[in-house]
Length: 273
Image (tube, rainbow, N blue to C red):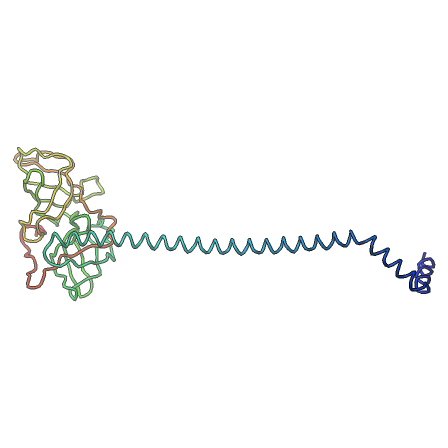
């Protein structure tokens, strides 16, 4: 076999030039379709790889754009929430005298069912004991203790926080105090000393009356729940659900006296002691 291959190679070498050219042309003609198919296949593969690369790059770009859009939506949602709080604050400013000082809740007293919170504003910001504290939804409580940079707020859920209040529909007055031990299923707050002959109904709205010297009039306190006569039979008492969600407080507002204003006096309401 080797001898035959060698003979063929020798014959090709000794072959006249014209004959060799004709044989080369014949080989080219015979293999041209195959070579053309290989070239087209290679071009198709290159185009496929390029197309896949472009798709991968486009997918990455779209993923990046989607991620940035999600972040932007989250940012816009946070801005909208902040705008709602600011609009509510402006509404409160229009209704109240003095200056509303915004503060963030930094600590909750979880051992007493959120009866106290700590805010990041103190004496250097003009905060003093017994100033009213509210959220955009309604009354929260009063300032109990103050340091230079922080303040502790006694929530209206605490039995030591008492608020002179009125029933808006009836223009009747009473005292709202914290319900005590919520762990035993008690009402968050209770309004006492309501005239026994008054037609108090579930859903009646309760506001501060401004009579006690601590909380100004017109702050939303909450809504009436169950109503019953007290033990003496001389008055009614009503469960009250606070308007402010005490478990989700994030931003609160301290009502600081305006220029020349005096801090509220610590009188009948605000505390038992």
